[in-house]
Amino acid sequence: MAFAQGSRSSLSYITETAFGTTPSTPTFAFLPMNTHSLDLTKDRVEGNEIQADRMTRVDRHGNKQAGGTLEVDLRKGDFDELMESAFFSSYAANVLKIGTTPKFFTMEDAAQDISQFRTFTGMAVSSMNVSIAPNQMVTANFDMVGKGMTQAATTASTGGAPTASTTNAPFDSYSGTISDGGSSIAIVTSIDFSVSNSLAPTFVVGADAAQSLEYGSAVVEGTMTVYYEDAALINKFLAETESSIEVSVDDPTGANPYTFLFPKVKYNGASVPVQNPQSRLITLPFVSLYDGTEGTNLKLTRTA
Image (cartoon, rainbow, N blue to C red; front, side, top):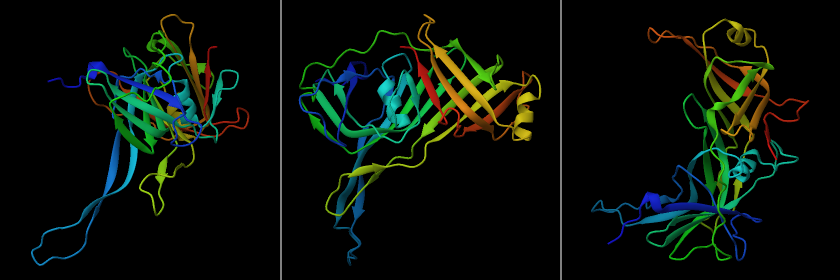
């Protein structure tokens, strides 16, 4: 008897041209991942009828939707389309800005050792969270929302085996820079930032699957922690001074940087607790606002 092993699992995807519809004779592309929690969930619809014996007689499945989180080590090339989905936009001359056009995928979770394939349709990035900390790979979580799922004993990649992912090394915390207001800062202990689109499925009478995904504003925010060296960043919070943050990450080659620019930042806190005998840290939550010069509240620039 064989049981599916995580070490024999793979994830692949293809871009959809219509929400929830897998292209005909598709060839998927492998998507490297650390973990994922993609699944189908259904609402439970309970009967309200009262019986003298107190026993429930009606219990139905209601609306269904797909979703889950992908955790990945970021690197050049493999996650550009997911980032386009998070930004609601497409790269133009290797620059990606927040936009208004959603992007959907069909994704396949393959248990290769038992030949079982779960195919998720209408998948889009509801939020993307990037985490950078010392002595770690740069990680990203993509929270996905979608339409539905099917299970089969054969792959949906009927146009051929999925194409291989890149061989690029992941980004790490040793390669890159962070600046505030155009000046490099070398006292950062961690920075996390996210793009949230607040995706939610829409349902109608006569169908239990989502007809589309609705979305809200693109909220870009994050948290930076730095060593308490002086009051410069605290004063920006106290005076409500707008600034900017630029985060550049790279792999060990030094030739594949991805640069995230938050063009108009407002710090919404500056906590400086005493938690132990060691160095004190300032925790700085921030929000990134629309900047008229850049035409966005977040810009990502990649190498060609």
